[in-house]
Length: 286
Image (cartoon, rainbow, N blue to C red; front, side, top):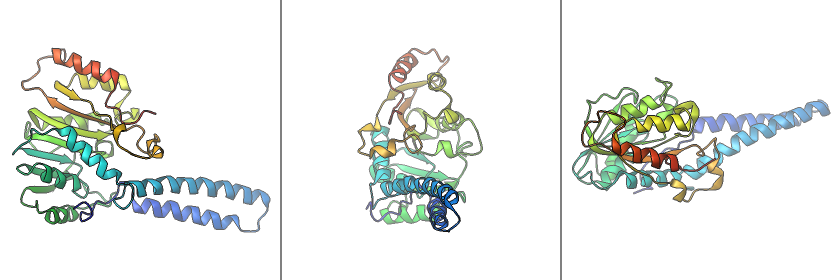
């Protein structure tokens, strides 16, 4: 089944083409007989462009199903951290891409209804049509639906879903600068007592503020339980742990409270904050 689904890749092909073409052009320009200084300068440019191409190209190969299958490993971890209590509930996958995670959710929870949403902008090489094709390929088209939307303003009422997932999506939402608002919007549509499992660049200060600020934010959300899962356990190459690739990525799966929280000082929050201070859903430390 894994080989039949069209995964796509987190690294965009068009970016690789631009970077590769630039490196190739610089390499050819080095050969021009325009003097030593010129050749030295162009050699430096060539090396810089070559490195800027090789790192994402290596990532592309590792992410792909014909390479390191890192995307598959992330999906499996997200599903595992979501828990087994979904039953015949409703699930939302935010930022579905080509719909692979949504399809896998439907396969893992055979009685659940899954909705996958994505903006499917021109910047990405994913589409709704491929999502629907993948659902048909897996035989789950009757339980999986896809719709376009903005993760910063989900088109669902409060407390709609029994669970929610998202993989490396929140930081890509361009309609808001503070990505914590995207996270909070995702939580809004999860029912009290529901579960969620998210992966994103939670350690990138430009997206989520400092670690202390993000901890304080989490502590005030009214969450009942945090299930820490370090994805250092995933077998991925050391190079992918670079801060420019996955080095600042974190995972957390939590459950919302079974009843409303009157104050962020609700007793259960203290245990959450303590856990966060020990290891805030670390994937790979810098």
